[in-house]
Amino acid sequence: MEKRNLSLLTDFYELTMANGFFLDGRENEIAVFDVFFRRVPDDGGYAILAGLESIIDYIENLKFTAEEIEFLRSKKIFSEGFLNYLANFKFTSDVFAIEEGTPIFPNEPIFVIKGPIIECQLIETMVLLSYNHQSLIATKASRIVREAKGRAVLEFGARRAHSYDAAIIGARSAYIGGVIGTSNTISDMYYGIPALGTMAHSYVQSFDSEYEAFKSYALNYPDNTVLLVDTYDTLNQGVPNAIKVHNEVLVPMGKKLKGIRIDSGDLAYLSKKVREMLDNAGLTETTITVSNSLDEYLIRDLIVHQDAKIDTFGVGERLITARSEAVFGGVYKLSAIERNGILVPRIKISDNVAKTTIPGFKQVYRFYDENNMAIADVITLFDEVIDESKPYMLFDPNAPWKEKLVSNFKAVPLLTKIFDNGKLIYKKPSLKEIRAKKEQLFGTLWKEVIRLQNPHEYYVDLSKPLWDLRQEMITKHRSR
Ligand SMILES: Nc1ncnc2c1ncn2[C@@H]1O[C@H](COP(=O)(O)OP(=O)(O)OP(=O)(O)O)[C@@H](O)[C@H]1O
Ligand SMILES: O=P(O)(O)OC[C@H]1O[C@H](OP(=O)(O)OP(=O)(O)O)[C@H](O)[C@@H]1O
Ligand SMILES: O=C(O)c1cccnc1
Image 1 (cartoon, rainbow, N blue to C red):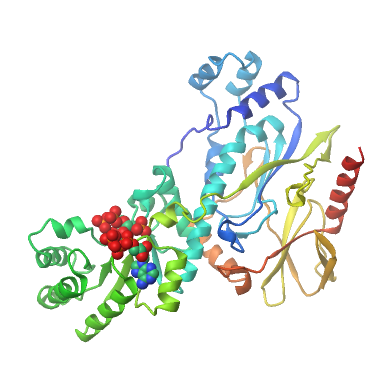
Image 2: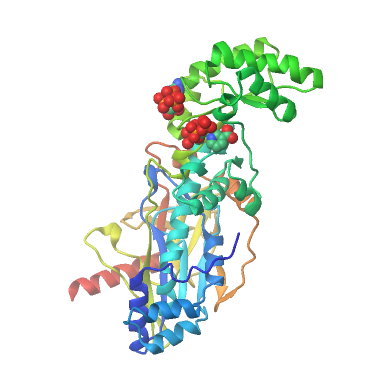
């Protein structure tokens, strides 16, 4: 994708805080920040991570031009020393991240940024915006694709996306989530997501008859004739005209009608009737695509409860805007700060237990059982070693008496180092690799975790040393 300098896409308070750190001589103070989220949208049991590639591109392009410095100077609140620091800005932090396509769960660190506090603060807004938006759409897409039960899902949302970036990058996120293609051509050019589609009502309306419209389309695209049959009357005109064009235009060319699309009316009833009509005409391989404000719930209803005969779902507005719950609440919290060369954990305490942060510089391990199914994620101190040869005690951090001893497990660290001292050391995977990773890792989740309603809460536990540290810090702060 194009490289854009988005350095000033940062909340103004990041700059005022950064200026403050600079004036206090703290610009080289090392801090650790964690990105995590507290709740899965739509009360789901998992989320799919996307956004890392955008974050990498953003950081790699992070610089402040003369024009931007002049703009900041015009605000008359930033010191010349700070403006000079920005003019010579160089990113020097370490960034750790879970890889795109990985299923992620509440409270675990998804990204960890460790570096000069000014740098950590300056990138907060873009890190959150990239990860929140893209994970939201990838998660929504994965829900929709899952409910389609192996049927194809196409992303049709560009026209209703909340800006062009949301359309372009939204298609990428939806692809990670499992759609097979997009209507958005530029996303194919940028990312290689197959651009696919059918035709609009305008094409049919522009001809003097529906038959002529279908005939023209078939002559122009004999190998890929997908006809929109609901402009006038699906069962009495659209489908008979499509069959007629198959017989009169395509068969003489040695071709077959590839598919039809229905975009209105009762999609279950119509799909069943249309299937019957196509089959009776010998068009058993002609596919049925449906669209019209679909989402995972309607798709499930169509398939499970109404036995609709549908091969492909075109899903636009409710996917690209994640309409049912349009916020992915990822946050960015300070978890440690360096004092005399040593990282000192920091905590944010809240009366709401869930809002009390997990202190310290951390790692996350995903535990797999002997059948390679994910059992739990365990957040540890960064340097902790998990010995897979010995049984390991998992316990609920909010109810520590609830324990489970696991053996024969595999513990895989999820946070990978992406930037080392400001240098990119991560080999960015291709989008196809990310999508394949999502498929593979999604297969390690129990059905109970991924079901739409009242999913089982996947365990995200703390290691004993980390739990002890947190308790100790809570006690210390409370007793003050
Ligand atoms: N069998 C069905 N079961 C559940 N929902 C359905 C079924 N068939 C269609 N729907 C959904 O009902 C809604 C109908 O929307 P709407 O009333 O806007 O469409 P319409 O009148 O069929 O067509 P148009 O888009 O031309 O107005 C859509 O979200 C559609 O996906
Ligand atoms: O409903 P969505 O999930 O967002 O799916 C995309 C919608 O966009 C198109 O409608 P539109 O009326 O914009 O154009 P059309 O003339 O091609 O139907 C298409 O026919 C779908 O209904
Ligand atoms: O190709 C299609 O059928 C399509 C594309 C965008 C939006 N709705 C439908």
